Image (cartoon, rainbow, N blue to C red; front, side, top):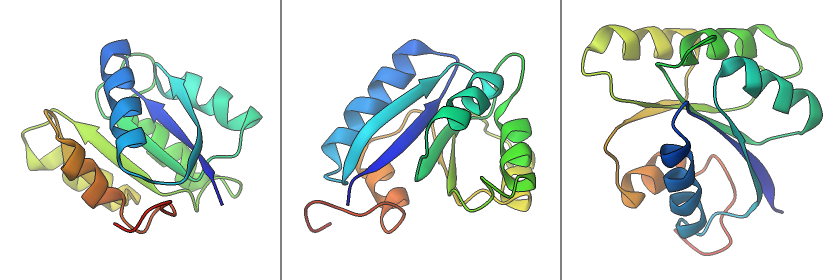
Length: 129
């Protein structure tokens, strides 16, 4: 069964790269939705059911940690796996994300294989991983 995925990053270029990488993973993805920050992501989630959220940590208006906290506090969204995509070098932000309930994280710059590895088992595959 195909699933929808939400990619949240304030960089349109990173969102496009993540879309391409997601398509290359062989996962059963129907639609990839995009948002430029956490506030936009919440609006997307009100209109679409997604099986996975990939989000940057550092964004304007509502950052990835605030988005993660909002998702985990919501009965409707608290079971959605959230993978953080970050340039954060320090362990503090990553540790905070894990504490808030992030399923995992990938550091930028990333490879398709790194994304595929982190997402294995989170979304069904159309081809064996």
